[in-house]
Each structure stands twice: as structure tokens, then as C-alpha cells.
Length: 623
View 1 (cartoon, one colour):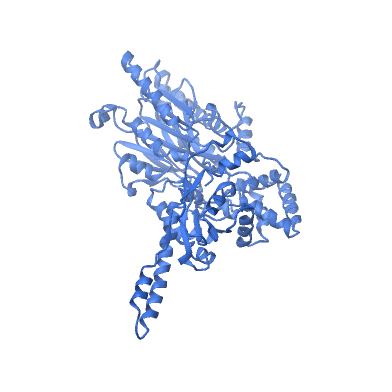
View 2: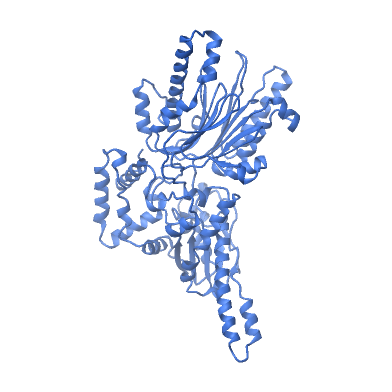
């Protein structure tokens, strides 16, 4: 119901054949560019604020451009980027200049959602570091958020560098660029001492450049969740994933092409290849495609506990991935016992629906679970009827015809421009973002609606609950297929401020109601005392805010806080449990949003910092 911003989506393409090969087989030299466009469109769900594309062309004579970049802001950024590229190509072809813009062996694409509050074209990937030596040029993009930007910044400043801006992408560009310079200088000395000069020296450096040395120099200093992608001007493409596997990355290779993307189905669809041929990039490793098209996978960081992000599976990733589809259905199915309890087992007078549209798959799983539950009830009832001396056929027929009642009761009608109004008028407009199917339930029924997450609760309170109440149900059960979101994210999802979480606000209200506000003060004191400790020694003391209460107590308080005074129906909120989350998504155990168990040391520092900011009334996140 409430859009949550995700950091980014990445796409990398490396062609392994001459352009003439693609012209003959596919009818266009721009085969790689068309695949870049297709995959960026397929990843549009991951970033709708801005987009960028880059290209590197190899073996270009001096005096001619070999790195191209196009960036744009806005929800139509992809369209604008590729329209501009197409115009440049058409102009070059008409003028017969011999220049071929965006015709290259390496392509890089990026979709952006900002989670830092910074906006503007200067912050749109890919970033470019220029140099007259091809092997010192660097195109960079990524899906990442670093928890220790200040430390990385201090480190690069200590080397004598002067970054233009204090932002993680700029800082990483300078850090990696400096390491790339160091690798070039190492090779320069080696080959210069061997007697090479001029173009021979330059070619030897370009030939022997090893970007794994660059990443081994930089990556150990990073704390965060990331997939970072780069391309050097001399034709090396690479992508690296964080050691805990927090952010996803997949790749595919055949004799024509190598691609890397944030999601598996994107590659499967764009290249028409089966799931088994699309590989997941192992955490802590990098994939490198050298100048001659040779691919290698290299471990850069030691193996660490795998903490693939579960929230990404619940909310962001494309449901067309069969594994994600099954996981989401299982999330719904596992909610059956709790939901059945909430309606008092009265399935005859309960209608099931979902709040469009991302929860639809979990809804299917929940309904299928109830159908299985109903089958067992039918078997029991039929056996009881058959045990009678004269079974009633009409009664048996009635039992067999029992169905789970399902309706689409909420419809997202239009996206109203609520920014034109203020105060009560704005709230009134927000209350009409969704419409309902009148007559879809009987007055006095229970109405069960499932959503994939309830993070802030704003839309529930401002519109959804009131809208559903118009149907005159006896009880409205709002079901979340994810557990209570209690802790901020610091790895690339826009959930960084404590006060935004309805679960946190509910816990704070419970502390107040139970004369336990001293706990909030004590947590603040403990967080402050840890401020000067190394990240590795910091503990997440915010957990103590929730410790006195059960999940059910917090859920009841949330329901109370989100229920408008004029609503007549009883409101209950049912959350997924963390235990069931892991049952449904066993291969992605990263659950820090719900448990507070952060996979990297920087996470504990940032959650404590977020609490300090909340307690002191600040709105910005600490980094």
C-alpha cells in the first residue's frame, strides 16, 4: 500500500564477437544496446526516479571518443535516454562522420531510487572518471548503500585526495579511481624498467591491468550491502557483490555475450534462456570480463555468513522468478492458522481479498491454504453424515459445495494529485485513492485483506480502513505477509528513520501506557555511550524497546493507532512471524528489519544513531 523506495537496479552487457557478427545474425550492430534497453525496462520496478546508460568501445584510435554516457531524471528516464541515443546515432549516420556513438563492446545500465535524500543529475549513475590513459578511465554504477561512508572518506582524504562531494557514490568513485591509478603506476614501473616506452608501454599496461588488485585494495574497507559494477576505458568489465550477499546479482554467459543484472528473470526474458543457465554471483566475489572476452570469477573478500535480504524477496523482486513466486505463496499459506483464529473459525461469513497489487501472490497462497483447511473440514463433516443410519444427500451436497469466499474488494482507481490540497482536504483526497466493489460482501461478514507489508501505516489510516468500512463488515482483518518492520535499513532500502515505523511508535506508546518510559531513556543513554566505540563493539540496544511486549500486544496497539474514530468495524492486524518468514524464504535469512540482527557491524551503529536522532527530535539519519 505504501511505496517503499529501493536503492537501484543494475545491468551490464559485454559483447564477445565483432560487431559484424551481430549485424549478420541479428540484423544490427547495436544488438548489445538493444539488450541493455530491454533489461533496463524489465528492471524498471527497481528504480523510477532516474536512469543512466554507459558504453565503452575498444580499440579506438586516438582522437576519437570511446566512452559514451547518457543520464536522465524522472519516471520516463529510460525512454528519454534511449530516444537521445537513437537521435545521436541517426545524426552520425546521416552526416557520415565515421563516429559511432554508443556502439561498443561494454554497456552499463542503471535504474535509481534515491534513499539518501539527494537528487539531481549529478547523483545519477553511471559515474565517470576521465583520464587520457584508457586504462585509467572508469565508469561506475551500483546498487549499494555503505554504512561507513565517513571512514572511507577519511581514508581517501588521508591519501591527499580532495573529493568534490560527500556522497557514497562520489567517494567510491574516487577511492576506486585512486586504486586504479596505483595499479597503473605499478605496471608502468614494471614495464618501464623492462625497457618499454611510448605506445608499447601503454599497450602493455592496458594488457596486464588486473582490476582484482583494485578491488582487493578497496573492498575490505566497505561495510554495507552492495553490487558495484565498473568498466575501464581499455575494455575490462566487472561486478562485485558484498560478502554477506545482501544485495542480489545474477549473470549469464555464452559464446556471444556476458550479462549481469539485479534479477534472474530479467536475463531469462531478455536472452530467452532457462533458469538453470542464469547463475547467482557468489557473495564476496567479482565477475570480470577481460579485454579478450575471457570471463573469470574471483573471490575478493573472505566468506561470511550469508544474509540475503528477505524483504527484497517479499516486496521488490519480480514475482516472475519461480522461486520468489513460490516463496510469496508460502508466506500467504503460513498465515492461515493466525487468520483463522482472528475470524473465530467462521469461514462461512468471511470474505478474503488483497490490497492491490503486490500482495496478490501471497493472497493466492493464503486462499489455497484455506482451501486445504476447508477440505479437512469437509472430510470430517461428510464422515459424520455417512455414519448416520440414513445420510442426507442434500446435506452432503451442501458440504461439498462449500467454498472460500473471495472477492476483489479494493481497486486502485486513480493516483490523485493530493499535493494540490492541504490539511483535511488533502486527507479527504487521499481517502479516495482506492475504491471498493460495493456489494462484494454481506453486512456483518468478516473481511480479510492481505498486504505484503505494513511499515508506516499511513495509507491504512488515511484511506484503506475507512474505505473497507463502507462495506459494513463486522470485522476487518488486515494481514501482513511480512513480520513487523521494527528497525531501519542501512543497506539500500528507504527505511532509515525510527519514527516512521508504526511498530516502533506502538512500542513507545506501550512503554508510556505501562509507566515504562525509563526504558526509552535508558536505551538513549546506552546508545550515546557507544557512540565512540569501534563498530565491531557496538550492540543494538534498540531491541530493548520491544522486549517487554509480545508481538500480539504490539499488533493490537498498531490496530488501535491506525483505526480512525469514525470506523464502525472491529479492526485487527495479523502479522507474519519471523519464524514463518524463514520457513517460507529459507535461502535468504537476512531479517534485520524484523529482528534487529544486522549482518555487518555498521548496521548496529546506524540503528543506534537512528534512535538517538529520534529521541533528540532530529529527522536526518546518522552515517
